[in-house]
Length: 329
Image (tube, rainbow, N blue to C red; front, side):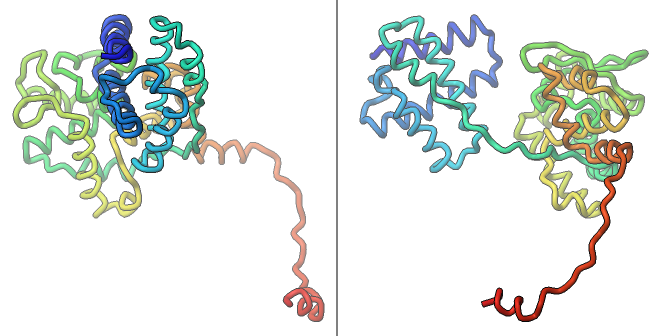
C-alpha cells in the first residue's frame, strides 16, 4: 500500500470525523469526490487506487480530472468547485505528513476555483404558495404530513437537511412557539412559528402520537424522510398545483426554492437583512444580499424616490432613399 492510502484514510477519520466533527453529509461529499478522483486516476495511469502515490496525483492530472467532471460527466461549475475544495483540503492535510512533496502539493493547491454566473434566485408568489399548500390530499395521512411539511418549510425557511432532522420534541408551543434545529456548522437555532403553523403542527403531532425522539415528518414506515423524498414530494405537489396556478408550470420548484420564498416573504415584510440572515442560519450577512438583488419591487420603490432623467424623445426621420439603397448593397 502506498503513502496516499493511509494519508487519505487518516484525513477522513482523524481530520474530518474526530477533529472537525464534520456532518455525515460533508463526509459523504468528500468520499464521493475521492472515489471519482481515484477511479479517474486508475483509468489514466493504470494503477489500482491502493497503489497510487501522491506523485501520481499531480497538478496536470487534477486539472484533467476537473475537465472530465465538466465535459464528460456534465457536472456544473459549482460541483466542480466542490470536488476541488475536497482535494485542496486533503492536500493541505498531506503537506503536514509528507513535507517532501511540498512542491507538488503547492502546485495542486494553486489550481483555482472557476468563476460562474450567479442567476437570480427563484421564489414563489403568494398565489403560488397558496396553490402548493392546497395541493396535498388532507384526507390521507401522507397528505396531512406533506401539508404540514410544506407549511413549515415555507414559513421557517429551514434547509431540507434541517427539515428531515426535526423530531417531535423539537416543536415548542405556547407563548413564543418555535422549532429547534441543528443547522449547518452544527449550530443550533430556534425559528418562530406563526399561529397558523403552530396550530397545524399541534394537530399533526396529536395524530402522529410519537415519542419525543421520533421524526416529525416520518415515512409510512416511521423512518425519517430522505432529501430525495422531500424533493419528490415538492415536485409532485407543484405539478398538481400548476393545474390551478399556471405560473408554476414554468418554474422548477425544489425544497431550496421554498427556503428562498421564506426569505423573500420576510424581505417584503420589511425585515432587515441581518435579521433574515439570523433567521436562515447564514454564516455571513453578505449571503443574504442575493434576496435584495432578486427583489424587483424593492428596486422599483428605490426608482420612485429618484429624480426622473429629462430627455426629449426625437422624431424618427427615414434616411435618404439613395443612401439607403447604397448601404443595402
